[in-house]
Image (cartoon, rainbow, N blue to C red; front, side, top):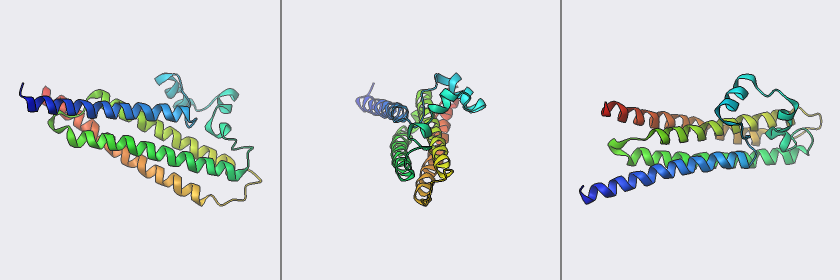
Length: 186
């Protein structure tokens, strides 16, 4: 092995682990912050996506319920949604920057399956958080004592949706990079 090759391989490995680490941190933060709930793995996620929320206990454990969208002062609820949306957007942007770094630095080596899966997992968590924020906004907006303009919240949600759309494109490029490595190896 030539010394220059060792440095390239070490750099690639660091970028890959940085993406996986950033993705894992984002997913854990989304659960810890209460934006999404830990759902028992893939089966729980599939059940929620297909069947929606079914029991009263599950409804009580939603983001909207945790922040008091149905009972707390509307101004406080809206401020919490804005803060959480900004945090979720910033976190996803950080994960996406790691993915972009991997895409630009990987060269012909491409991305690994673990990179693609970890980034897509973070993207799914971001999408779930976005839906949670929208649901909480809908709940607080439907209240009879709601007399606050939601335009600032809508603006934050739109900005988060744009970051999610960009992340989808990045995920596609990362998957293409992974697929090109698989095709080149065969």
